[in-house]
Length: 148
Image (tube, rainbow, N blue to C red):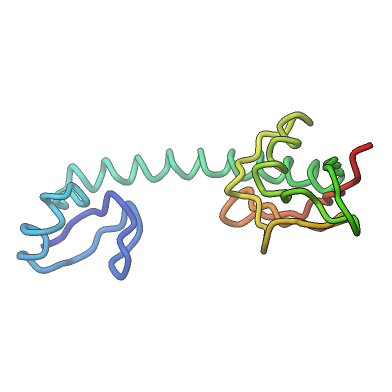
């Protein structure tokens, strides 16, 4: 049976692809979960139009992400924290803290797109990776300083 995928399905394909699956797999699993639609001439024409619209939208999002990446490379993020003995932080600096500082700086970045190997627990200058798009990522300089 030929079907058109509505979602990305591991080991089967990506959204919008026309794939051939067994009749039982389509009837018993894919169709009841609304993961696919049967492929006929009308649905194939519709999905081709939908693919073109998605591609245009994707190109616009990519250009916006590239512009944001350039601005973030130039931006330096400073976070102040209370410290104890040996300049150790009370608590830590997480990706949510960095996202809040970026939001105050005028950048809309989701905390899940900020990649930290582990929370920052000491003063200093750190380089943090920010993934803005599936293909576009940049680095951000984060400076953790002592609160006076």
